[in-house]
Image 1: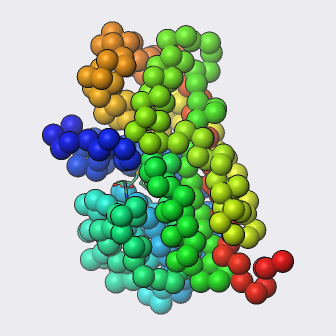
Image 2: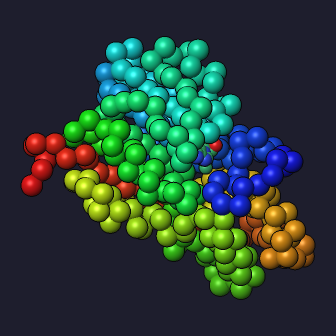
Length: 273
Ligand SMILES: C[S@@+](CC[C@H](N)C(=O)[O-])C[C@H]1O[C@@H](n2cnc3c(N)ncnc32)[C@H](O)[C@@H]1O
């Protein structure tokens, strides 16, 4: 883990931390097929201008750069773009920009499509960032935001210790500004800021059995959060050890959070009612 001071609020899982690359790869392996399919349908096509916020490990940026081709433009931002930088050399149509979506203006558009996955839920200023994304679009352009809703998250079979550990982790994340219900609130929020044609779908996976690709995401997340929880007295070392053992138990199935993919369009004369 890095020795940098943790922020009191906001994103606590820095890209500088050991294991973060693997955590991001697990997210990509589990969710890219759904994300890229939806982005294609929303307008990531040859010639499109695309904004990707908090682009992380860069697989969606790479895919988008190939989809839009030389006549398009992809702007991939991250507050720490260390995993994106090598992509910019390969694709002239891809700009990698170090940008803090909360404290800075977004890179100038306009864009046909703007996307953020597993970013806004972490940020206390998530509604402001959502507005900035919408404002960066051309009329008729689409925003796709993908974030977890924790309602589905839990052990597949009754397991008090596992349920309790999830409660401790979600309380901790909420205390640093994470919204465990953001995924389900997104459609309403998008409509409230004036987006049209808002729609959503959710993806729930099971850990172990069906979806091994995602497991490193959970392991790495817990590996990073547990020392913070033990330091803060929210979890005992013994409970943390038991949590690790459950990850190694082939009989311990977990149902994941629901990844809500939520999209809408900036009104244009043709879709305004
Ligand atoms: C959980 S990762 C998700 C990465 C990628 N979107 C994905 O789903 O594969 C969140 C990413 O957002 C970045 N991030 C955190 N706070 C940010 C901010 N204020 N502005 C821009 N990026 C931020 C992190 O550095 C990290 O790369």
